Image (cartoon, rainbow, N blue to C red; front, side):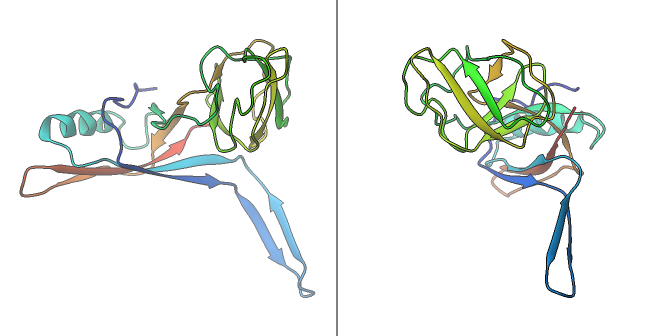
Length: 199
């Protein structure tokens, strides 16, 4: 692990891709046969806004320290989740096994609609994997809520495990060399590709 991408430098755009390795064949009858293999992972295509020299050198020097794909680092997703209570202080309720896709959480205000919204990202503390919530979730009278995630769990969860629910940290590595360009006004343009680290 080699640090955290500078959070004072906000990308102008991020393209997120959901990658799920599959094998597909079509029989002579026209029937489609599909088999999943490997784990789901996220890739991020990051474009920085035009940067002055000081800011550009901060970004580029950090990326250079990663030695292309050799190191991994933390990239904080810069967009807030939409859920009404996508904040700190939420924990897992009960143990959950690898392969589970519905997770019980606690720590919400009672009887609140939309504590999480479909499309919000979360990460469970002590684990690297980031998950997407696929259905809106409401809390009950006791402040508990059940969320549905994708992909299914790749690591087991323990009772009271914390949840990174605001702007989750992706653990990533660069998928190629990083270059930048400079215009005649002295602004720098940097873009790069990231892949999620699992495990």
